[in-house]
Length: 126
Image (cartoon, rainbow, N blue to C red):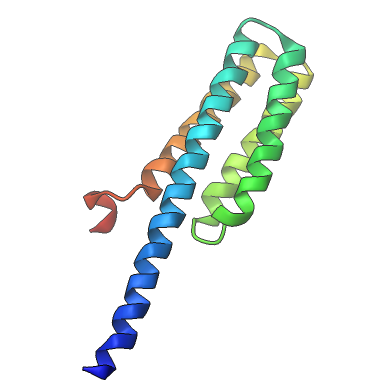
């Protein structure tokens, strides 16, 4: 019986860690999606100064949150989002509405798929 205490304790700690990591990722993705929606609206109404500020905020917030998320998420997916955000800042800086909107839409899709991959569902477990 004593030999079973350590494995169950480690398993419990692992489950708690997975729960908090998943919860953090989902909350961060929700926040980033809200920020991209705000950026998309400012681009659509051609408020380029506000759009540039929002895109830089998106970049810094993503860089801050990615430090922890990169410990338990796929790096290729995270890099793709980062590259798109970098493109977005330059498109907005140059006031290119078409490329800016397509880049924001791409970022939203990548973040949604990251959120779906990290959510605890039966499809992700099996």
